[in-house]
Length: 217
Length: 257
Image 1 (cartoon, chains in turn purple, orange):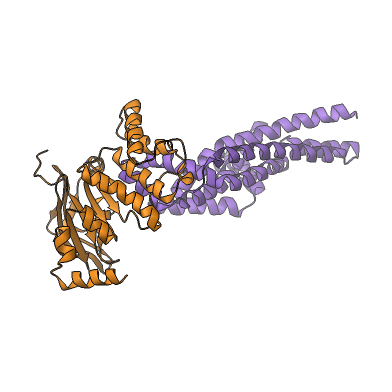
Image 2 (cartoon, one colour):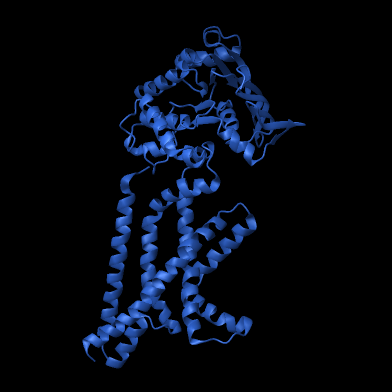
């Protein structure tokens, strides 16, 4: 097979990979905030529920969660599975899993903000949501950026787990090509794609970090 | 508001942390234009008193009013607080300057001053900004509007935090050991600002360890020990001629350093 054709096929897989990456971030970044706030809630049942949720999501393999979410509609509700449901299940599993990790990073950031910041905001009359959005969150973002970069880079590579359920992302494509061609070249190329992707992620995170470097505390 | 009505009035306030009875029936009224200094040993209850008055903590029994606004009422030995709106309204009537400044590090100096007036008080941005610039100039901070707090010295940061509190146009300004985190030389520049405010008849309540400053600036000094007001009086009277044994002991310890 020609190199160009191989690249085109890998490129199509790459598009799926990128799609999974962005959909996961789109869902898990905000969901993580909700989980983190629940985890820190004074309402004990909610706090325990979120703690349990995080424990399950971090304590079991993402691959297993993908299968669980894929098969759940059939076993629990008797709904017939379609080829599309593989993709849906994968996206949902990734969002739920990554939201748990992000929640813990958010929590570490939120809890690192000194009490005095809340007290200063309180006596100035800010409501609790204004305090969170205007005073706490911007400072949290700066503090958690390195940890977030780590997690997002891991996500780029974790997208390859979707191969196990049969989503045609880049790693599946590379494996199929390698088997047909009897060559390791497709794997090498896929590796290069992941690396390049992560270099872009690194550059972007680095820029954001530099932009927030105008103050320290 | 009539001039003889106190701006802040606490009556028979009690506060415990577990078995530790920190405030044991404190009553205090601050009149318009008055500067009150609160002195006393660490752990004597002065910070707790200030935190209760500024609603950072709730007391167990007693009452609190800001002018005509009743914030907490004593019902059979239990303090009953007003609803959210009452507490919010009360917070707009006072300002608090913290020992550690607690400026918002991600905001510029000017933004530290104008954000709450715009967001909380919904005042006009241009008006607030003009006022903020004026305040910064009064604090000797002109030209620092667009710096962030970490670029300023401790003394400058504390002056910004005083300006931030003043920008809300409070009736009364509280200070919680405003110079305790500062070097002696930086202490003076902050004390000067507070002196200037006193000469302009800003109503202030200052918890401080600076005896000389308290004597100079305060109309009235209150000595608190073990959760009660042991003695109060004019600055001269209390520092030069203390009546109570505990006051004398405290002041003599201070003079010895």
